[in-house]
Image (cartoon, rainbow, N blue to C red):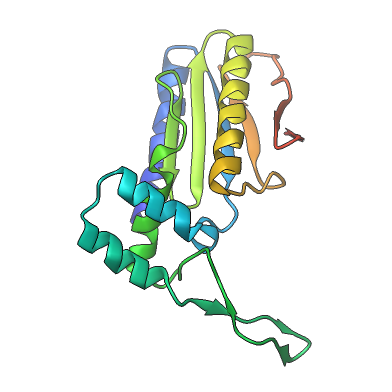
Length: 185
């Protein structure tokens, strides 16, 4: 819970910082669909190797991820066990750490403020020109969309929100951003 509170405070402070210098802050608050439950095992191992984690640690994590099964229950009928190639259990303290490693190559840019922790992913951009903010946010969303497709990440566009925080007495409206072929509101 502490980490989520920390992320919320970082976002709030960034918005206030922009307001203090009379800048707009455009934000997209991405709702990641079950990041821990959908993290693709093979991609995580590839990233661990890429980041040069020690072999013994990679083997421990592979064992932690292997031989996982799931069942589906519909109308009191339970399916047979099926193997899973993605996800870890939320009850493990290791799962959030693995999710953060998996997301460590999430697209970043010096102009964009990223707040990432497990299933919380927020991007913010500040400036005095709304068109600039929209252009940069849309560019970032396009890059994030590519990253999601490459690593099998899934964003819930129904719960993802685009918001413009602006200085008082402004009548500007945030133009529509799109992500995964859907308009964000």
